Structures are given as structure tokens and as C-alpha cells.
Image (cartoon, rainbow, N blue to C red; front, side, top):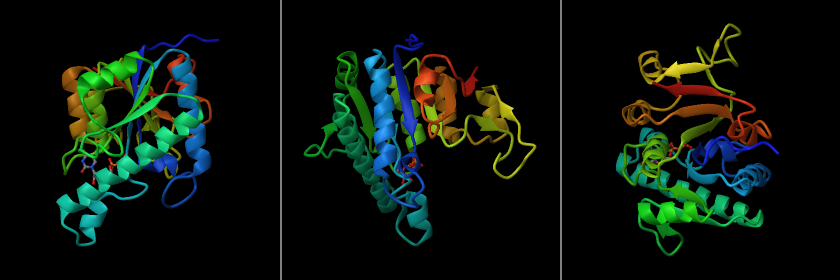
Length: 238
Ligand code: UDP
């Protein structure tokens, strides 16, 4: 079996990654597949931290556009990520993988509070840690939370799972001339406004030199291939 390239990774999954073909919520089939793949890399000895989004349930900006107070809307978005986190924990436990959900907002009857040292200890013991509730603050995104947690726990790389196999110069589903990038710098992403992550998240990675890889999580086996170096997505680094 191929050897993993990384000792500790942070995997960012958007809420939409859990939806499959549905327009809302969680597809049991998709979450089972993702849990299976996360289980595979965990069994290889890779320490896995996960940040999960909430866009499959609520997005603060969307609720605010419909007239809701933005801070309340963001609180709902953060709670949506906790629900996704619990679903992932359940799916991972069905795979026989030990898992802990840690939330950035206190909701400690359903999951642990985020405490960095405790999170690192879980990782060292081989437990998958799911970071929920983003950064715990409104006006941020789970991409920023992913950058922050990747840096805090000292991940070797941040893997961003998307629906395409990397970053393109234009939307590849609409533009046949869209070019796929192999390698990008943080500044290129910011200057060309490439859709990797929001600017706050990219700046944080740039300033702390956290390498990002964008890959296609919807392709079965891609996570294992990326972690063992058999496939690469688009790399973003200095
Ligand atoms: N959110 C927030 N602060 C954070 C992270 C998330 O307020 O630090 C809220 C925000 O409303 C966001 C929602 O949670 O729209 C869901 O997160 P996100 O949109 O990042 O999820 P994804 O697009 O990854 O599914």
C-alpha cells in the first residue's frame, strides 16, 4: 500500500459536499463515502482534522439578503455546521473511527468546546477531530476557520475538497477554454480573484505559510490518492 505524504492534514469540506445531488441537507450515501475515505487515511496513520461548512443548510449571507439580521443569520449558519459535524461524527463512528466534534461556540451538551491543546491531543491519539461552528464569530466563513485551525494545530497542508479537480481560470462547466492551474501563489489567487477560498482565508495562509491544495472530493478515491501523492490538485503556496 502507498505511504502517506503527510503526518497531519486539515481537510476542509463545504456543507455542499455532503449534499450529493440534492438541493439541501445531507445525502446518507455521500456522507458514508466521505467517512469511509477519511477512515482509510486515518487507518494509514494520518492525523485528520476536519472543518465542515454549513452551506447545505443555512448561509448567513443568504438569510440576511432575505431580510434577517446578519449576526443572527450567521449564528444559524454556525449552528448548521454543528449539525453537519455531528452527522460526520456518526458516519465516522459507523466506520469504526474514533471522532470528536469540537465547537467554536459553547454547545457542550452535544459536543466538546474547542480547546487547542485538547484538539492536538485527540489528533495525537489518532482520533479524527471535526471542528464545527467556524471561527465562532459572525462575518467569517468556514474557509477562514479552516485556515485558522490548520495553522493552530500545525497541519502539514490544508486540503480543500471541492466539486472540481483544482482551480481554473474560469468556470470549466461554462467556459471550454478554462485553464487548470497546477501551481499558484497566494498573491496570484488574491490579485486574480480566483475562486479558491475567500480573501481572509487566503491571507491567513499566506502570512503563516500554510500550503493549500484544492482537489475534487466528489471523485471516489481522490482523498486517498491526494494524501498518498498519487494525484494532485492545484497547489497554492508562496
Ligand atoms: N459562519 C460564521 N462564522 C464563521 C463560519 C461560518 O458566521 O466563522 C456562518 C456563516 O453564516 C456561513 C455559515 O456559517 O454562511 C456556513 O458556513 P460557510 O458558508 O463557510 O459554509 P460552506 O460554504 O463551507 O458550506
